[in-house]
Image 1 (spheres, rainbow, N blue to C red):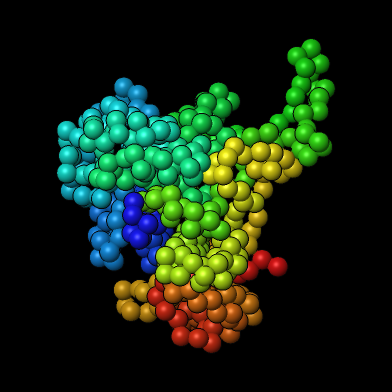
Image 2: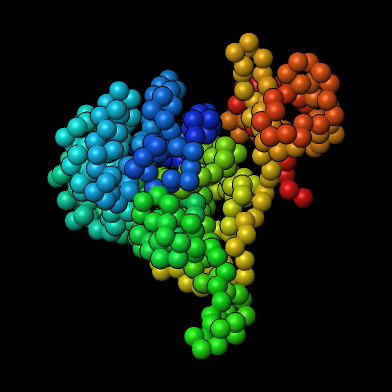
Amino acid sequence: MNESKKPELLMPAGSLPVLKTAVMYGADAVYVGGESLSLRAGAKNFTMAELKEGVAFAHAHGAKVYVAANIFAHNQDLRPALKFFLLLKNVMPDGLIMSDPGLFSMAAELCPEIPRHISTQANNTNYGTFMFWNKQGATRAVAARELSLQELAEIRQSMPEDMELEAFVHGAMCISYSGRCLISSFLTGRDANQGACTHPCRWKYHLVEETRPGSYMPVDEDERGTYLYNSKDLCMIEHIPDLLSAGIDSLKVEGRMKNALYVATVARAYRAAIDDAQEDPEKYFRRLPWYLAEVKKCTTRPFCTGFYYGQPDTASQIYDAATYEHGAVYMGTVQREEDGRLMVEQKNKFSVGDTLELMRPDGTNLPVTVRGILSEEGEALESVPHPGQKFIPDLGVTLQEWDILRKPEA
């Protein structure tokens, strides 16, 4: 990629509302999963009707949609895959993300008009691999998370111009190599490579000698704990100029299980960081504290830079807990109803007197206090305790569609 060319900001979405939020908060593209062949079986995922609506919405706002079909397929998966690819011809997403050569070949035959991307699950660790997939007809490959910035720059320089390089820059890290994990399958019978990961890398473990059941042996490291596989989350928002210099075409955020607040917050922060870094590096470094403060308002683990600057060391692991840090609570998003009214659908309990923060796609954050609440029927309420309730809050400011309400954690 030419350094003057703006890289794509690629955000995740596990549902149609989150896809729309990602687009409105600055994503150039969104990746989603259908009801089959996706490695996030626990996400809500998209029906064909929702895929069609999501693609139409994204295209209307100048954004793209990529559909993940990145499981390692077994024999019983091939017939559903055939049907899935044929149905996608009526949706026409902007790309298919795959790792299985059989599925790749099937898609090439059944829907050749849809560009094919190679998932990080395919272990794309060198420029020879990228060129191999390019010769098979792939237009993009996602780099393995185990690569450094120097390796990514070398890959970009060695690749054909018509082959795009995508790399993860934010989100959860996996203890396995390029996501190929057997721990979940071994312990629970749920295959991570079929989209059913139970995340055993976040569990707490004890060591027991076979002939002494119930007698636990210490497995801590310097008394820091027993979370042996528990990586910090990746965050490269403090290193955007280095990513630009490496020539990465698409900066990808992990998190198809995340809610709209997470996606909006991360998308808006990275959008501003990318735009500022390309417009004026001094502006980027001046605003850097704001970008970092914003992404910390999400539900995250502590941050690290993964493999970008060399092999991770003990500082990249979390030894004492598997819990998240909560920067803010998601209260709801302002949506326009069919009758034209702007309303909020409650995500967490909402009460008169609450002090909140209203965030907007343009980067504005407004401190507000809930002065009053009206139900859908116009009845005055003191609180909205039930998830999914729709209401009209009086915040002392004029609401705009796509405003998000969050409650900063004390």
